[in-house]
Image 1 (cartoon, rainbow, N blue to C red):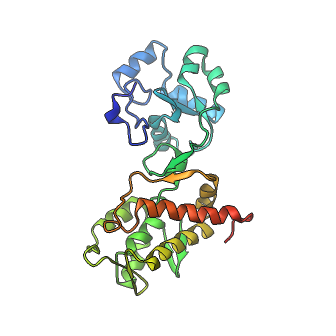
Image 2 (tube, rainbow, N blue to C red):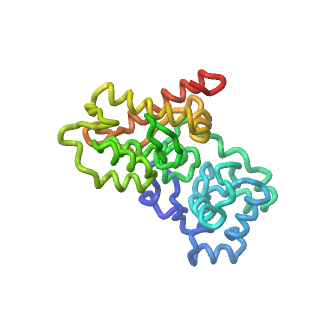
Image 3 (spheres, rainbow, N blue to C red):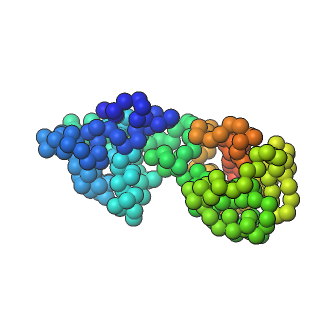
Amino acid sequence: MCKGDDNRDENGLCPGQCMCCPFAWNDEAEYVQNLGCLPTPFDIVEMKKQSGHNWACHSDESKQCAGFVDHMKEHHPEIDTSTGKLISYDKWYREGPEAAMEQAGEHLEMADVINIDFRSPIPIETKLSNFNNYPFVFSGVECAGMEGLVQSFKIKDKKDQELMCTFSGRQAKKIGRELPDWKHDQLLHWRGLDYDRDGKAYYELVLSAYRAMAEQNEEFRTLLVSTGDRKLTHKVGSSKMTETVLTEREFCEILTTVRSSLLRSSVMEF
């Protein structure tokens, strides 16, 4: 079992700290493995290779084991954990690995609500985050990903903006925190123009950026369309417009708008 509610994230997902998780690498897990009551990490990786399915968290078998996901990213990056269904510990324990792999399939249906979070062990929630590297061109400027672009809105100088757009993910976020404070005058910038943070023009600017990324980047476009009509949330985002260049509500609303446009087009073009 997990060590307590304090070790579960805001989505109720196990963050890879279950005491007897095979990927906890602790005495408790090793003891249970020696008794034959728990598969070893090697066994689980072999099941993934054989079946294409992923190891479920034994505290919540509707979710992937976060320890398994982290282990595969670090030691087997060539294996995709975003595909496949879930292998049940209970089924493995009662009937063995073959039965568990055969039975896998009922738990990995996409949830009705998708909470976008780069830290999530659920692939679709991770891959819709602004921290991903989805290159695209916006207003003639090459962008390594969306995070670098939205952070560049804090910068007035065009050349510095272009440089900011070459960064992506956590690095872009970190640099953005160190930029001059825009909050005093509530002005943001793009290509020589100033935008009121709470103005319609700024919202349309950001919307057009996401449209550009969806139009140009097939991976992002395909992932967004795959969510269908499910509700998108971003619980780790800020809700105060005066404190952030993109609130969680704006982020999810814009993604939903772009998705609707894509779904209306049979060829996924605007």
